[in-house]
Amino acid sequence: MKPIMREAKIEGNEDWPKWMVMGSVTYSEAARRMAMWCYNFSKVKKLPRSLRVLVRDQDGSGKEFPFDVQVRVDTKVIPLRGDE
Image (tube, rainbow, N blue to C red; front, top):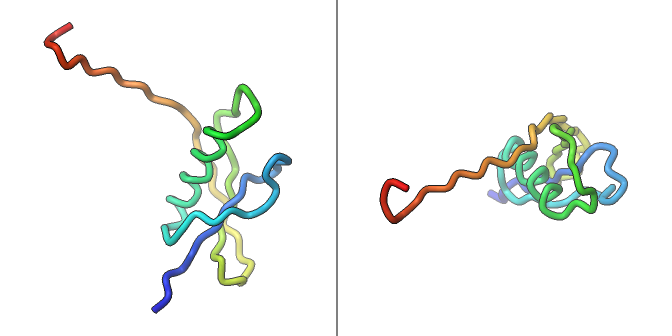
């Protein structure tokens, strides 16, 4: 059985208007990967707190599933030299 490939795009994004392949993952994971990709490669200095991501199967059925993805960066620093 051939794996189902998912593709996603950011709704209303003019920089990347085409669908991008996210791999053989769940719809939610495809939405998360697309939001992270947009966060890492966006030309805009400040991204909105949430992105509307559309996800569909690559099989050509055309049915799209929207996701609202909360964009945030959590940075946790753990010292390795003791209780500093």
